[in-house]
Length: 303
Image (cartoon, rainbow, N blue to C red):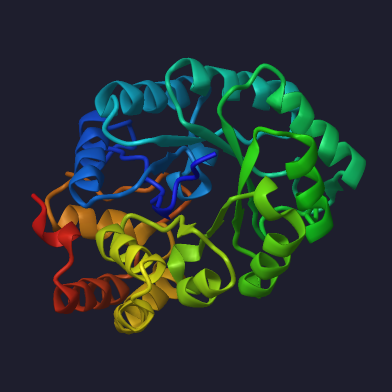
């Protein structure tokens, strides 16, 4: 297969000040990502506040995204659910509307409900039944169901639709390196996450791209392209220049950073996150905007 490489930012779900869906704002975010030369986009992920959406709202975001993008950019739809039946239904719906890929975490619930390796394998086999598009497995600390290198490689070998894995665990580079060796061509689409805070080590370890936020996807995409084109020193210099900015996003702001900067840049009208997630502290917000202005990113200039 020809795997997607580069940058696949996670699109935030846009709300009005009273926490209703802002679908026009959602469309503007997608246009911004297209103009920023994103290689694909992921929707309905944890960074999209998927956990605060109703089923009807999920459908609205999904349909709006697919209708608005058309063929302009591949879409990865997060379809995670503890129930393999519901995860399969969500995945088939994404396929029906034209998604290129679905992304799922392994089944878990809370801090204690997890499943063993055999149940994880069967889960992904059930989800893949009738699915013709690719599956990305999300390996993240949020899940209490562990995914060893051996288990991930086994799933990729036994479930042909599993061609991608997003590794955002501590020491991601070590796991990516081991996974690339264990799975080989059965798992060509290795990505990292966590806003690309470990991007260069992860690329060195075999990652083909990054699933970042929407804060600087234009610059991160160029870094990945330069790295894969053999311009390693150029890529390292650009990433190291961005790293304090990404670190501030990752450690001080979380999913709120992108929305704050999108509002600052007039891409969206409101930077609201749904309660109980609160606003950034005014000092943190001011520091984020100050750092962004020094970097002069597309997010502040696109509109």
